[in-house]
Length: 249
Image (cartoon, rainbow, N blue to C red; front, side, top):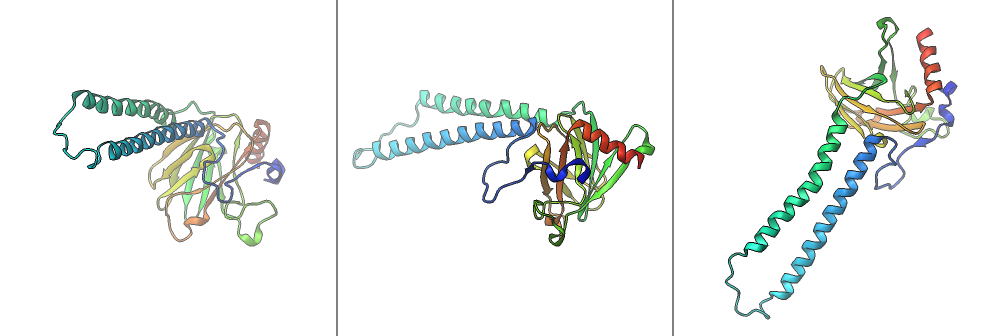
């Protein structure tokens, strides 16, 4: 893909010892990160409040201070409070999570459709066209260590990356020709199982040109760890030229 500037494209890869998400470059991943932040806030708040309550109970109701234990069996106000609070917490978590799941799964008005086929152990990308005779496909396999060029990340670089235009709604149809695979691109918030005999669907809309990397995320055999996914997001003009070159070749 040298003719389309792949060697000069920004690389969006995980960093050594990285513990957080990769920077989001699609609405899907932005929604996932916002949901993650909300959940982290909620569970941290719950942990702090519960810890404080436990500390208060241990100190306030210790045996030394209460030699005669209370015979209280229930407290209506407290029971109402600790019923309503969890309901509120579930609403805070549930409403945005359901909205996010709906956005992730609903069919999008895609401008481009691409089919990704998982194989042992490489990917085949198919670009369906309105004219079936013009549909084309190509295989994408990992570059061996001995063939890597400077700047190409080990275990992630491929000989022919998936090409897509920036600022474009792209539908991805995923399937498999042999065993279970999983098409995953973390920076885009994508992960869909590739099931033999079945087609699953997902989508992405990338706002920044560059090289994005993922991997098969379903144990699929001895070379499972050696079938990366490389997505090269280019300008719309470069994509049209790339498509034209393939359709006329």
